[in-house]
Length: 146
Image 1 (cartoon, rainbow, N blue to C red):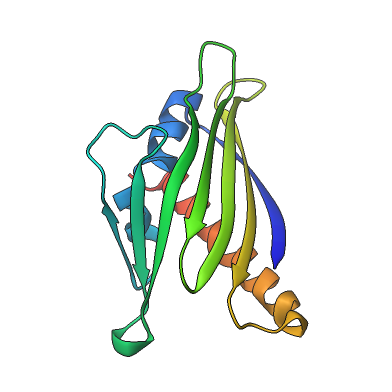
Image 2 (image 1 turned 90 degrees about the horizontal axis):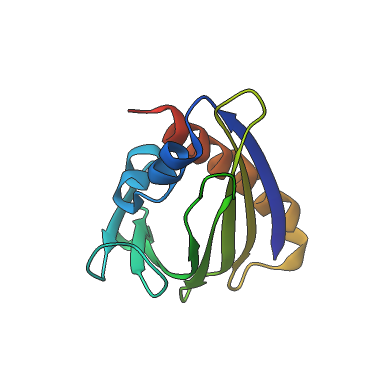
């Protein structure tokens, strides 16, 4: 199990950064070899379920997630979203906050507690490094890609 925190500053308003981060199918555009299917009708809210399928052929796995907290950003209030991973292979949670940034734009704080079943604890440093890199690239892509 690994816990990590990422922080990013975006030129976008908090509402636009929030929209980009919570467009679940769009995550597949920035995470290689991944497809995302939303299983519940829109709009996103507490109880929304989506599944990220990552990998190729027999090496692919499903990462089902449920939104358990949903508070879009307000006038001066940050937005918060928390996801719980219900997979057979990947478990844990992710949460992010979108704050107004000083001078305009927004500041995103992403926290994730990630566990891969059957992965021995001595592999945690490798999992941590690869997760920070992958999720960092994903957040960067979501915030900057049109």
